[in-house]
Structure formats: C-alpha cells, structure tokens
Amino acid sequence: QEQLVESGGGLVQPGGSLRLSCVASGIFFSSHTMGWYRQAPGKERDLVATITSLGSTNYVDSVKGRFTISRDNAKNTVYLQMNSLKPEDTAVYYCNADLLAGTTHYQYWGQGTQVTVSS
Image (cartoon, rainbow, N blue to C red):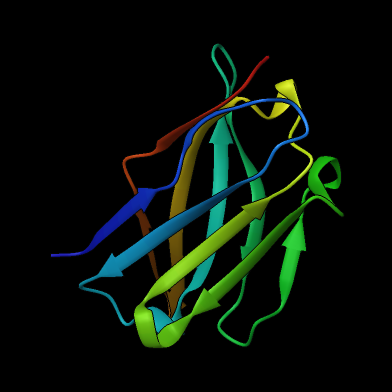
C-alpha cells in the first residue's frame, strides 16, 4: 500500500522557521520525483518545490531563497525547510510522489499538514 505521511506543521510567528517531513512507504522512493504543494483556504493547490531522483530542485518564485527541499533516499523521506516565513505561506502543505514509467504515470499524495504563520 502506497503511503505518504507528512509531519512538522504548526503555528509559527512571521520570520520563524519550520521543517516539514514526508515519509514514503510502498513505493520505490529513490525513483520518484518528490514535491511539496500547498493549498490556502479558497485557493487551488499550487506547487512549492520539487526534487528529482537525481537531486535537481525547482522552486516557485515566492519561496526562492527561503525554502529548501531535500531528500534522504535511505530514509524514504523528503524535507522542506522553511525559513523567514510570511503570513502568506499559511496553507495546508501536501507531499507528492511522481513517477513516469513508460506510458504509465504514477502519482501519490499525503494527507497534508497545516502551516499557520501568524503573530
């Protein structure tokens, strides 16, 4: 059974930091591109950052220089280090695993973890 479990969300003041973790099971983790997405109330789910199986990273412009995505294939875990948090970063953050194998596209989602940035 494929499963992604996020943790690390919470309430933090503006300018603070959080580190999100996502542990995967039931998938060949090292082959998947892993990503973090977020969804604010009343808005669509948007990409935050991705990291490929080879370690190449990509970020949405609004988080560049503040967020860092990384992965530990030995632990089947992807992280999102979030620094200098702003109120507009408030959202539910979702972990995603993505793999294109031939013509078959595999995609899995976690249940989400709430991040609230407020004073």
